[in-house]
Length: 144
Ligand code: ADP
Ligand code: MG
Image 1 (tube, rainbow, N blue to C red):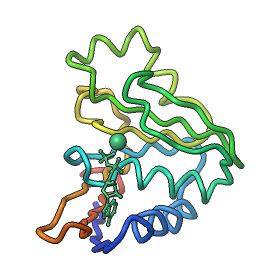
Image 2: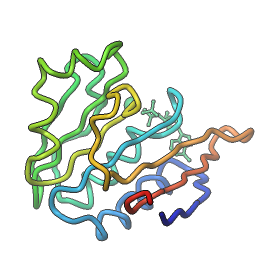
Image 3: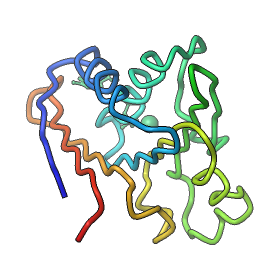
Image 4: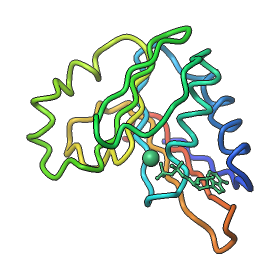
């Protein structure tokens, strides 16, 4: 597994980092975002959406759980914050989103139990002591 870490000093830096990562993603990619509230997960998705040519404003689907956007490819944005039991995901047809075309990005992905595909790209967001600093660690590739 390959990991890399970047330090972001502003929301815009987080968005542009996401945009640069978008270039590496293949159709069907699944991204699992981990980190506390306010650590920059939604901000990251905004950068991803921008790179994919999504014109709508991206906000957190905390209440709807899933938002779908259309850019150059479909972008599915999930937020599992309100999911307390992975069984609840059956109602959402969670697995069909994972198999769908396009890119699926999931905030609070750890709440999905063990349903994520092996090749999921895991991204960890940490808030620093400085208000605008975030440490972003990307772990990609199949675990061996
Ligand atoms: P999450 O989805 O993880 O709850 P959000 O992306 O919604 O977090 O919110 C992150 C908040 O932190 C925003 O208010 C944003 O302006 C602020 N922020 C400050 N510095 C950064 C940074 N370097 N990267 C991302 N967000 C930052
Ligand atoms: Mg969020």
